[in-house]
Length: 246
Image (tube, rainbow, N blue to C red; front, side):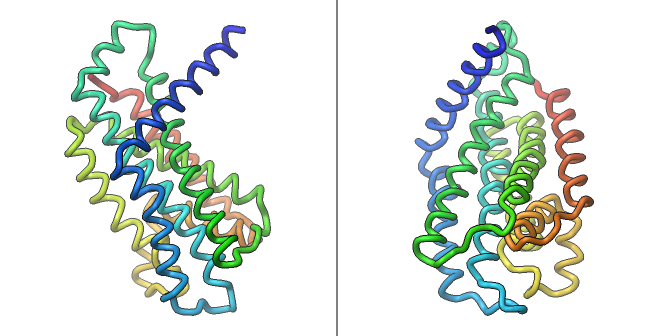
């Protein structure tokens, strides 16, 4: 009974946080609407992919990674930093709410934001661009969740240590956009130079986009990529809990 009540409470708070995020026009546009614009542009301008893979079958998983990364690496740290600026974190110290609870609620809310953006991409891809179903739905879901967990942990860590909303936003964007272009979330790996692929493979966004694409086309997921995402979640998430301060 107590655990069920706690879960309902967390779900309710996460839903409220999601609504607050969506009320921010910048966050809502870049996490929900902007990826749809990118999808339309890519479907009308992208070069054909080697091997005959439909462009939309590569683009939707790539832009899904874009959505996850934006929600977790840019919007999430800024939200936590805003909590600090408004002294909400200090007030929470006087309540039974722990840092783990706060981070869990924020991660869940921003995960829901990424879910909204991803679902819209898939729906538009199916309706407008004849996107086919993923060859392995289970692999796609697993890759998406591990990607959200790993990138979300990095976002929580940034929010735990950065003192201001502006600073968190600037640093989040500074990290996010180079990773998007180098890791294959904007430019397909097939069309990237060897040097770009080598650099991109070292970035935390790379295992997410590669795993999502592999699951969508029916390829086996790389255990190395899955292990990297789990390791990032454990290390970055543990540090976030340890370092969260008011």
